Length: 561
Image (spheres, rainbow, N blue to C red):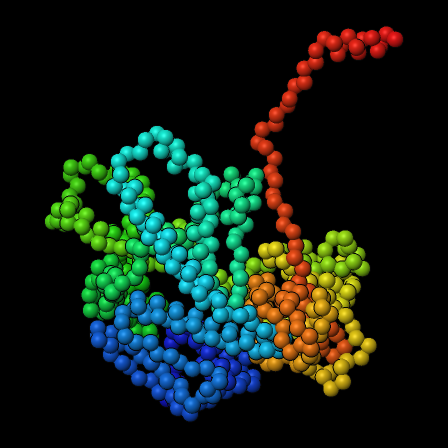
């Protein structure tokens, strides 16, 4: 019926794809029939559907929506290689698009606050030296591991030394981690300085709670010489993941794709109560999945688990089809197989130096007011917020200012507080620093900029002020989580365009102000002091004090006199 009226119906489209098409064509997405009042109809210059046949016989159907505004979106086609390679390329390409977009917004924000990047003439030499030192240490560790494998059974004294790591071993491990940290790019923002984790410092290793924690808290493939050198993806390793066309039932080395079930090709117009449909549905549910994995893949994913003896073992009446291959052949196949799947990498351990795991920031948020009825308790109790850059729990910088700072109708979420938000203090704590947000009312708005967000900085050390400029649209769209990351880790930026030279940190020694109409929000960085957690001893020791006879004699004399 729809086709007769010139309407093409496309099935099985993901919601995110529908949203992208709606954005490019400027159409409204209708989720129910109740929204059919006045929807916005999208448009494009041309629409066509074309099917392509790949080299392995698999067909791909592409839908072309052309003639949309270029600034609303585009499509990038990735081809060549197998599906595993294309999945890797897609993930890297998406990350690079995110990096390019974030850098564009961040650069404009740094221009608005008159930031001066640090001198990079010496950084290239330091990074090159750090990379050489890291590779050298990895080769040394690899030789040590090979030497330990070839050596004989260690003595009891050597076992004791291995069981009790010395201070020198801990210092070498810390130095190796610091070298790997300096030579690894973890953020899309340049000139960020990540400090050494507290538990790897001298004070962290000597804290009372350290003995209750695992010895290896921070693991990375870059720190494990044997793991790092044996898990590189090569051209030969790609053959292990060369998944073929499922319709041709071509088997790969690790995964077997079965033929599609007849239910997948059944007519969509079959009645639900039809006996044939019910039989196909029951058989489809009983057959299980279409993918069957090789036993070597299951062993790789599950890890070195202890295999218990099956209750069927030992039954002489049970016939089992065993492949005709010797144990040497099976061992040779297992030795050649090197798992390179992310599932195998991250099933048990999380790589602390993985750049994808650092595209977020965790902050502790608190809101309080000294004039509130909740004082001295905060209006919003401390709670941890995990903010993904341009993702979950994140908001644009301009959106945060307009909604949570400059909106007159915004009130305190605590029902027991009736104090205006201008009298509240909000701050975000992260690591050893915090960002306080204070609000003030002006007597009158700045002339000519009543409907524009203005920004400027003031140095608390030399009392200099940067020029007052409007917040650009790109800086308005900057991720608020990215803004907090700059305040916490980008302490190397200085200030430019000043009458007198100012060598203080722009993000730590300067107060940043944002003004809109007759309201001003100030962002101030303050260092905080971290305290260690002290737990009571599991045993209570009572020291009995023994007193000699002279004490009792003197006590008796005092009582009789």
